[in-house]
Amino acid sequence: MGDTVDRERIASAVRELISAIGENPDSPELASTPFRVADSYAEFFAGVGRDPAVLLSDSVPVGDDTGELVVVRDISLRSMCEHHLLPFRGRAHIAYRPNERVVGLSAIPRVVDVLAARPQMQERLGEQIAQTLDDGLRPRGVLVVLEASHGCVADRGVRQSDSAIITVASRGSLADAAEQAAVFALIGRPEGGAA
Image 1 (cartoon, rainbow, N blue to C red):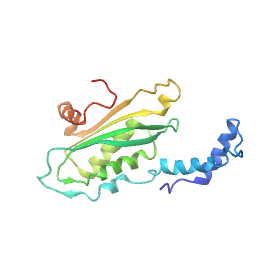
Image 2: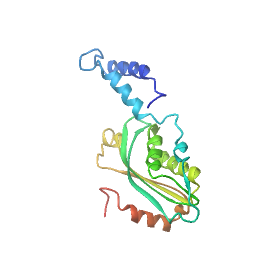
Image 3: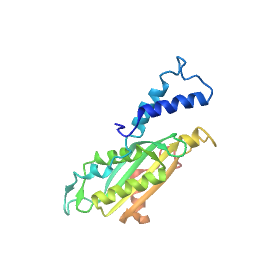
Image 4: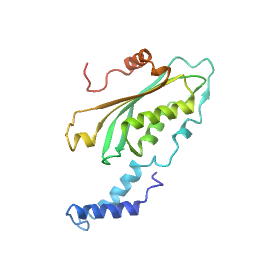
């Protein structure tokens, strides 16, 4: 976890940050904070330098017996906004229309985890998930719906703590509006959304 993260440099930078805000980084309350932040960042950014396509390499050929649609919904999502290094959290809902191969269902949340564990934008994250699945499985179609609340919107600036951002990325047959509507019906309305 976090092999690319230089914990010593992060701890040093956090000590400087604590000083820059007018606090004493050597006080008993803050002395361990730089190392705690370094450990947190190693976890938050564990996807940096990792190839999510590897997670799809164990796909299974199924020929014509693929079924019509695979939907994995309510995948927990946590990432860090690249603009403010504040977290965004929510859910990913992923559908794909198989072609010749399917993948173990745990591989899909793992792809989300690897891509989310780096500095991100929600819009780019959805596109990266869709492209990884499209490249790795060559399905007939892919649809990725992300719904998240952002620390940079909830905790600073406009302070809209109840807002949710929903993004959609699609490929192939699931780029069609009618096909998407069927998947949206399976996913259901986003938590807290309008009926």
